[in-house]
Length: 231
Image (cartoon, rainbow, N blue to C red; front, side, top):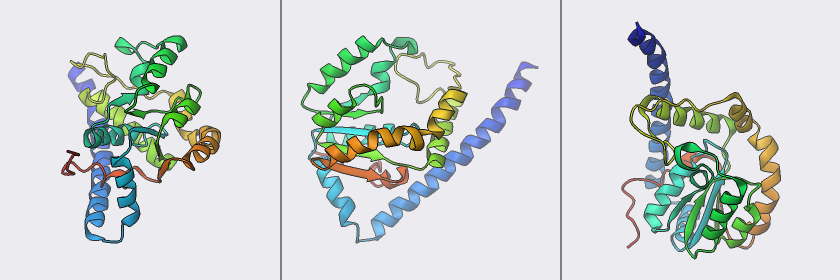
């Protein structure tokens, strides 16, 4: 009986995951194909060149915008250390750090000469991150795209125990991490959070390499598995 109940829950979620994941892969493949065919993409080439020579990159955007995937791929490509603010804020077994612990760890990271820092936490050392960075990448995606990304990530965790925070046991983990409060945050990100961080982004972006991606799919040509890594 338990297996039947589990199948009733598992199957619809698995089908939803296939739909979202398949759609994302199709759109991403289309972007890669278009990028490889068209020759008029000098703007993106200039951005890639800037990223390749960057030393301190911050990647920010709404939850579900694809910033984690982009930051990890850029870390492989550029050999810059990848730093997740979620991993700093959430300790072992996903226990929340104190503000003092978080600020101490983040302050130590900011003093390093090379890194890719991914995450928002706009109320914690946001200005300092902008000041120390030489490249700012903003995943300025639509709310629909962000929500679909959040759902896909949560389904990955719930169905396959993948994309889990560091410190969580991966064996037989089933975690559905979408709460009503978190959904409200994602839905209100462009209306509430974006106006707070955008003036600072533009202020510091004027003196740094500022790259604004209106869709996570626009980063797919950058993150292609066959892209050669830096020597």
